[in-house]
Length: 277
Image 1 (spheres, one colour):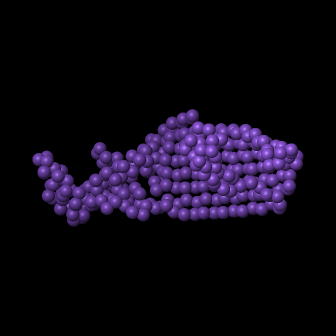
Image 2 (image 1 turned 90 degrees about the horizontal axis):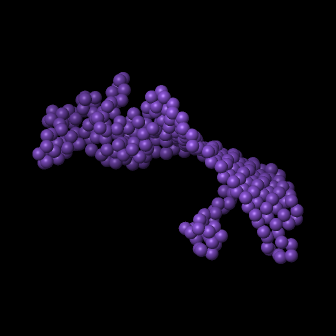
Image 3 (image 1 turned 135 degrees about the vertical axis):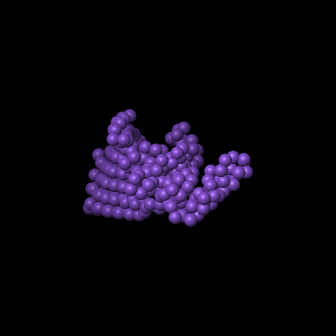
């Protein structure tokens, strides 16, 4: 990106018609400059991590307060005094667990890295700028990932002393992997699941949690995942003609082409379901 401009007043945004009613953000990409070819490369690597979890109740406090609420409503108690004591002792984490759903589901690290490579140069009559990019971003869930490959080519040709021809080509390939259970649903149930139910049994597998969603199982790629792919091609062709007899005046015509293709694939229970739109 060469520059970013924000048009907010009506006079400057009027050229965009109704699309500019709420303002316009103009993003100008870099263009080639006359001279020897120059190349640049950049690399970024980082991690995403939850910095603060909710301070939820443990199983002992949860069972105690739930029993108190049920007793105040003259309803049957959910736990016996022995159950509550076992939650407090923590000697049997399988039958009387103290499950921290937030840390189990959201406690991991999500690394991300980005590569960018660009070339530019040209002569007085021909200038070019080309760039390649790659982004790989993991999510906090093992089945969550985003990859992006992007390509750009800006070419400026000075056909005559008063005529300039420009071609801008850009392409983007995006690949996403996500759990079959919705992200918002996973987040919601992770916060709602009580600490008195287990997430998994060691050496056996994930636990059934009644009417609750076992979100630890939901984020496991073995439980199923969705793959989606989005391909975008953008093309701008412009011709600018200067008016020789009026200094500073020129006419510019622009043709734009936008092509988007979306594909999806779901894997669940060893069965592939393929969709295309």
